[in-house]
Image (cartoon, rainbow, N blue to C red; front, side, top):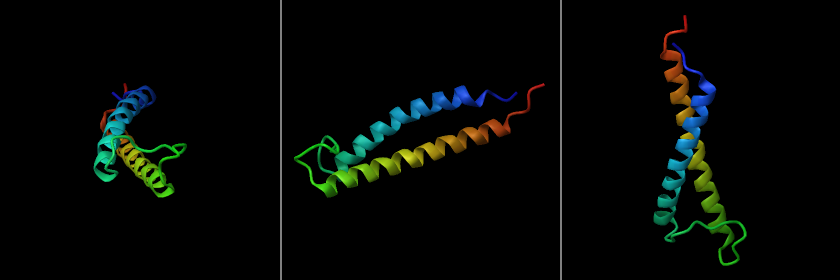
Length: 83
């Protein structure tokens, strides 16, 4: 039986979003050599540092979203149709 993809997709998205947020924080600690990633309004950070953090965060989130979406679609297609 196929599962309703909308609610499951929302749940997977929320859980993966929290996990990916933690992955980004750990990655930034290694790449940026700082505890907190810079935000766009911080006056003590350079343009290059802010843009690098944003690009890294976007790449991590987009890649994980694509992986979760693809895994969900594949799993849903493998289930037998509802009777």
